[in-house]
Structure formats: C-alpha cells, structure tokens
Amino acid sequence: MIKKTIILGIAILSLNSAAYAADWIRLNITNTEKYIYLDHDSISKNENNLYYVVRFKNNSDKEKIAYLKYGINEDKIGIIKVKEYNPEKYESPKVWQESYAFMKKVNEDSFFNNINNFVKDDEMVQKLVTTRQLRKQNTRSNNSELIKKYGEKYPEMKDYITSVESKIRENWKLPVTNSGGVAKVQFKISREGKLISCEIKQSSGNKNNDDSAIAAVKNTEPFDAFPQNADKNLKEINILMTFDYYVMDVNKK
Image (cartoon, rainbow, N blue to C red; front, side):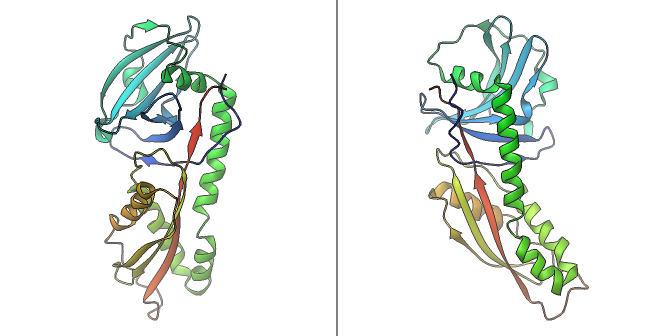
C-alpha cells in the first residue's frame, strides 16, 4: 500500500527542449540507493495500459531514463527501453508508448513496484497535481510585494520583473539529491542588465539545491536592460526569488 500522508518537499522543474517538455518530480523511495524522478507529464492511460517515464541515477553512474508500460488487466510491468538521459533528445510519449515491451510481474520489494503503485493510483496522482499547482502559485507569487512596489512607482517594470523570473526558471537545472526544501536567492540587476550580486538568503538545507538555485540566476546573465521608458533614477532592482524542491514519498506502509 502507498503511504498517502507524507509529503517531504518539492522539486518543481519544467525542462523545455525542442523534443518535449518534461515535468520532473523527485520521488522518495527507501528501498533503493538510486535517485528517482518521474515525469508527471509523461503519464498517460488507455483502456489496457498505463505509460510513464522515470529518470534514475546512482552516485557513480551516468543518469539514465526508462520508458515504462504497465498492463492494467494483467498486472505486469514492461520496460520499453532504457538509455542515457539527454534532455535534448527526450521523446514525447506518442513516439514510444506503442512500442513492444516484454511484460512481467515485478518483485514486491522492487522500487519499480513502488513507483508503479503510485502512478496507477489516480487519487494520489490527482492529489499531487493539486498540491503542486498550489505550490507553484505560492512560489511564483513570492515576489508579489516586490512587483507591487516597483509596479506602483515604476509601472513599466512589472512585466520586466516577471520576465526575469520566467527566464531564470527556464535555466533551473534540477540537481541529483535526496533532499527537498526551499531555497531563497537574493540578487541585484543593474539598469544595463548586469548581475551585480547574488547570494543565498535562505538555505534549503542542501548544498546541491542551493548551488542549483544560484546557478540558475548566474546562467541567465546577461539580463535584458530595463525598459527604455523606465525612470532614469532607477539604477538597479533587488529581487528575492524562491526555489521550491518537492519530494514525493511513494513508499509502502
């Protein structure tokens, strides 16, 4: 049975590539040393089968990706293919889900069984969707006071700040880590779009998480210059941005 009451944190990420946009969710599974991520957007179901994709990695291994198929009526799992993970070559479910897979019963203690039990639980997946949407809204409204402050005094800066946040999130690469938590990064941008400073204001409690948040900001530089009609006295803006790492517990009771 799936543990339905424990939610440890969240790693929210959308990987936008030319091939396919993924929504990776970190899964906490106690019976494996692997780091596991589920692409929520890959989950699809028809009358007979359930399809989904997971990423996994040991400390020393290269990161891999597995395309999985679950036979609903026969209660068997098939691995359609496993390969090294490359976000630029990640394929839409429509490309692979009709491929052949050898179906077999999975050991009760297998971490694949834990993942599969979670994915086939419609109620649990819907709970996850609802929770994630709320957390996304809360995270993205974190700078609402800042936007309001600048928006009232400098109306032309509201869209600029929203654009900065959006570009940074596109550059946010999810780290391989067991930990959830929330990191907050404080940074300043000059009128010309130069990053003046960037530091952790609130640690997530995990260095890899904090480093990935800092990297997301730094890798977005150079930023766009302020709008031409922005007040000439506005030399820089100071932004506090939240990075929410969500980890879903899918262990059996």
